[in-house]
Structure formats: C-alpha cells, structure tokens
Figure 1 (cartoon, rainbow, N blue to C red):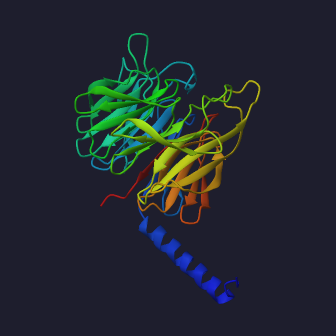
Figure 2: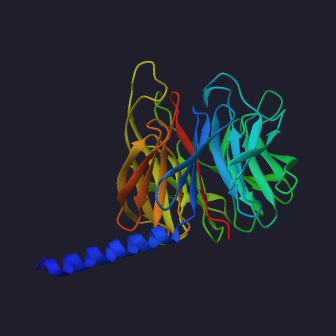
Figure 3: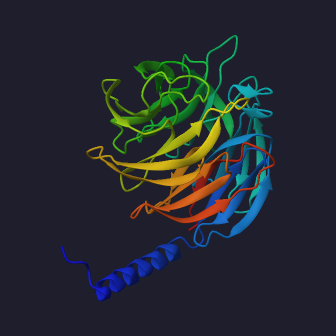
Amino acid sequence: MSQPSRTARTSRAARAARAARAARAARAGDVLAVVSQSGPTVSFFDAATDRHLDTLQVLAEPHELCFDPTQRLLWCSSAYHSGYYHANSGRRTELTVIDADTRRIVEVIDLAPEHGPHGLALDTARGRLYVSVEGGEDRPGGVVVIDTATRRPLGRIDTDAPGPHWFAVSPDGRTGFATNKEAPFVSVVDLERGTLTAKVEVPGSEGLAVSPDGTRVYAAGPYFSASAAPAAAPGIRVIDVPTATVTAVLPTDSPALPVHLTSTGLLLAGEVRSTPAPGSALGRQLPGRLTVFATDDHRRLGSVEVGLFPLTITSSPDGGLAYVAGVVSSTVDVIDLATLTPVSRLTVPKLADPGAHGLAYLPRAE
C-alpha cells in the first residue's frame, strides 16, 4: 500500500490543527474544577487554555465534586478527617457548597449523624442531589437525598452494604445504583419510593456509569486492594437493568476504578497499575491507563498512559476530551479521545498523598 503524499499529510495536519483551534474556541469561558485531597483545595483551570485561575481552601479530605448547572453551584464531599477509605483517622460529615462563578464557599452542610459522604449524583429535573454515606454500628450504608433549592436533606435510602462509594442515577431520575467495595453486589434503589429493590451480583465494585437509555450500568470490579488477591478478573461488568443481572464483562489489563460515559457514547475506564511495596497500602504506583470501549458493540478501542492511580474521569460536553485525575501523581491528564493522544497535563497542589481526586467540568454561564 502506498504511503500518503507529503501534501496529503500536511493537509490532514492542517485540518487537525484547525479543528483543535475551533474546539478550544468553543470551550472559551468553560472551567475545570479539581479537588486535592491533601490540599485541601479545589483548583480551577481555564478549559480552553489550561491556565490556572484560582484555588479555594476547603475542609480536610475533599473527595468528589458535582456541578449543578441550574443553581450554578459546585458540591464537594469531605469523607474523612485524614487519610482515605480503610486508612483514615475518622469520618467527616460535611458537604461544601461553592459558587461556581465567584469560587467562594456559600455554605457548609453538616449531615451528622450520617458520615463518610463520598459519591455525588444529580437529578436536575427534580432538583435532587444524592450523596452516598458509609454505614455504622446501628445502620448500613446508604444514600442521603438533598433538595438542591433549599440545600437541606429530605431523607435517606439504605443500600444494605457498609461502604457504598460511587452512586449514579438513571436518566429518568427514578432509579439509583450504588457500588459497594466489599459487599458482593451493586445496590439498586427506587428513588421515588426510597427503597432497595435489587442486588446485582458483582464481586466488589468501584466506579460506575449508566447508559443514556437507562437499560445498562457499567460497573468496575472487583474492589481494588494492593495487599490482597483480587476476588475475580478485573474488568467492567455490564449490568442489564431490567433483569438486574450481569450480561458481559469487558476485560481490562489491570484493576479499573473510575468509569465514565461521554456524550458521544464512549466508555472510559481508568486502570491502576502497581506493584507491592512493604508498608504501603497502595503499593508502588506505575503509570495508569485510560482504556476506551465502544458502547454499541463493547469493542476495546485502545488505551493511553496517564498519571499515577487514576481515580476520577470526566469529559468535555462535546465528548472530545477526557480528563483523568491521578491521585498519587496529583495530576490531571487531558486526552484527545479522537486520537487517544495526550493534550496536556495539569499539576494540582498537594501537601502529601493523596492529591488530585474529584473533577467537575463547568460550562460557562449563558
């Protein structure tokens, strides 16, 4: 097969450059928000230029972010006083509410006696924020329901597992899904009735995402531990929602933690690569991988190297860019999803391990 001419290669490069400039122009005014657990901070970057805009000090151990475009508020969960899951000095009880445009704290909401808030999922149509919380001696883990207009809790839904971590909501807002690290199932809850309706057998689960039609859930598993043998081969479990069963496993080379679906129908998974290290709960970290699958036929489309211990993934609204937070390297890798090539790497300040964690993409105010 003949190689493309120099003129053809130059033409393609020019078109790609024009497309990149157009994409950056389309993101003008958009902002990427990034948590640093040990900062403890939320940093803000210009999504068009990667320029650092601001850093906001928040409560210790911020974990996840969730942007409410209706209220123009950014919600931030703080799970522990120090440390991380299974290696902490005690659970926190707070959510911090941040004005996305002034980048100032609006309110700190105390969920006590609920503790260990982590996963955040938003239903803008109903004005509800769902927050996963860890269990205690007197109750299992669950999900706290918050009214986003009044910013006050409305109730709680039990998930029948000690450590629900990530949480996602179906597009119609009627069903919620909680992954559980140690419990061998994904919890399915009826958000209208406030009840647990099913347990889908998964050998410990991490991140998850729900398909746009609400018929499938993609859950990473098994639960990652650097010191214990995995309960099953790593991969993304494909859950059929109507039957509450796993119908396929998309294999990954290493344990996967975060899972994200783009607006263009790509399934993104962050793979953690490590080797055992004496005295370290996380092991010695190697560069992680962003692995991409097609959701129509579940083909593996490729992968690209990212920072150490990828823990959170989001994407631009047009589905062109992925943002991957590496909690050990405290970086955010910006990846072009059309070519699976790195665009840039953002450095997030940290005082110690862990660093970059939660992400939120904030489109400019119209």
